Length: 429
Image 1 (tube, helix red, strand yellow):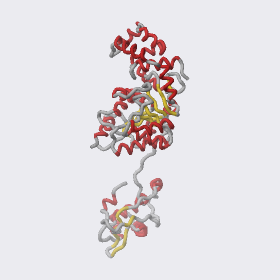
Image 2: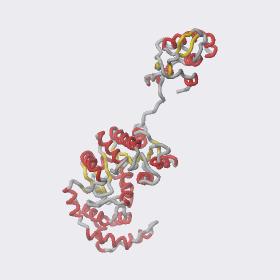
Image 3: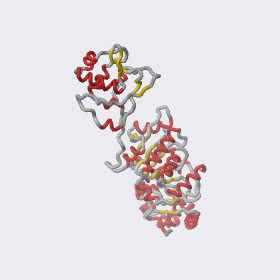
Image 4: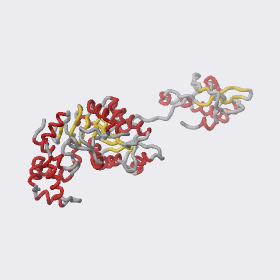
């Protein structure tokens, strides 16, 4: 429901540029309606004027006031609100139930209001959200990673926030929509303008399942400056930002800078060291400004609840050799690849007793690791590698100082490659 506050802020959104900190301080000083009256009368309060003169980078306040006055005179806030409602859009302002309070962290650059078009509640959608940003001209690697993050975050119940651009942004939105969670598209133009034009279908899906938003009034077209200023909203709305791909000079790094300024979590995905589109990510990691993340689970661990949203621990591959007892491994390592060796020499080389050696040789032969020849025992020539074993084998250590079980898993048989070198078999996993 529109109110005088909505109408006053709609007028100010026409009068001031997006992110105008001087206008933000004026509204904080006088309120939206008071700021409108002061601009119409072209008379700013002396206290506000003195305050602006003490800013670190004071602006030309008289010139700014003249621009505000001319734009305000040409504005039609009631018509903007009516046109927005006609096209299904709505204006929210600070204090509304749907307003995301985390935007207050922007201080004077907090948007005067937000135009929304979609079914999702912006505040609820952003309570548990992650910004996924990256290059427009992304590589296939970057697009693959962005899709994984979009799907993975969405399946875990996290909303994806991004800028709706080609490349990483668009793929992340599509992944989130595919997994069924709302996505938030932050535009640098009016919500009634589709930019880029090729994303018309994507934006339509986002409005049905999420929300498209902008601080620009309807009919406003994007400019380079608006894209950069828009990025602060992407960073502020979310708990953290992950940079998938970014050149050293890019909008994604600009968003990362806003995230750092706002003390939000920042993650970066590493890429090929030869890729210029990963150079920005590597710079963030090298300067320790970002945390290395490679999966959606790792990003959720970074931005989630401490102790509750932990990413699963990665493990090294498990092979059947891991299930052998230590004495059996020593016997296996002592068996030659070529020729052959008797039990006595194997026992001496392995440093175990003859009883353990004989027991281990029987088990290894039954499992297919070794074979008997005229010259003694040797590794099977057809054994090129050990097959993968169930991961549960790594959780149960073999009993110490015991003979191996008679039922050992067989190795993979491959007649083509030559037999492995003993050092290869001794390589720790």
